[in-house]
Length: 75
Image 1 (tube, helix red, strand yellow):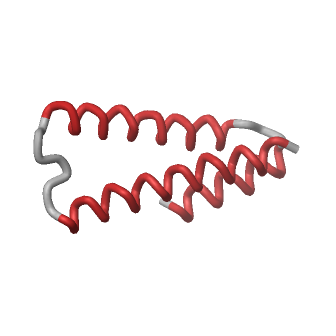
Image 2 (tube, rainbow, N blue to C red; image 1 turned 90 degrees about the vertical axis):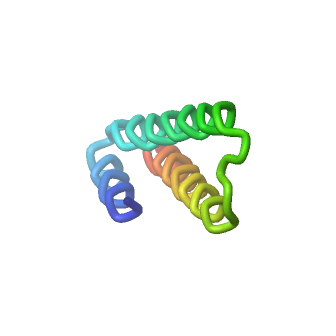
Image 3 (cartoon, rainbow, N blue to C red; image 1 turned 90 degrees about the horizontal axis):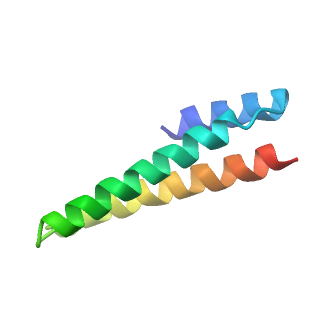
């Protein structure tokens, strides 16, 4: 996933397109809705410490992807 975001950001930088940012931002927004839905519908979400770590890691990667593509395509 990180490699895909890096490749999309490089293409966007070369072309001056904001598509990579839209994809990364859309993925982050979709993840936020999924996590919110699961958190509201399941009292014990995410459950174990391992699941909590995975949710945090995915969230961090998506935030970094959206932020980096925003900075790269802003110029």
